[in-house]
Amino acid sequence: MVDSIPTWAGGEPEGTPQRLATELPTPPVNDRPPPRDTKVITVEEQTKIEKELAAAREVQAKQAAQVKKARQDMLANQPKPPQPAQNPGN
Image (cartoon, rainbow, N blue to C red):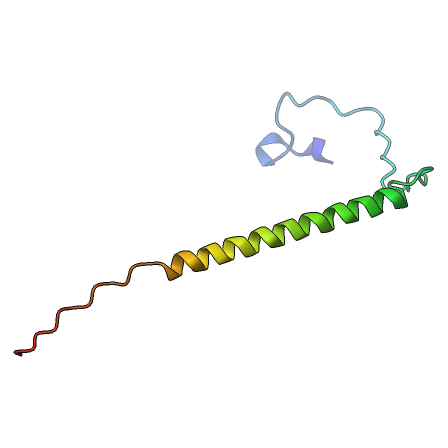
């Protein structure tokens, strides 16, 4: 159909390669892959990883608490702005 439309009307531009005589096969996009033979991770590995994550979470919580305390200490130790001088004669 597109081959019959002239170039000036939006058809294929000049020098376009010829179409294939046969269509390419459609890839099997809906086919499911075969089930895996092995587990992705063992129960022992998962337990080890969970313990490591819990330990890392505790370390980060301690560091966050230290940063929060240090920030509060820094804010508490700021110099107070000077008070304007009061003029008793006014």
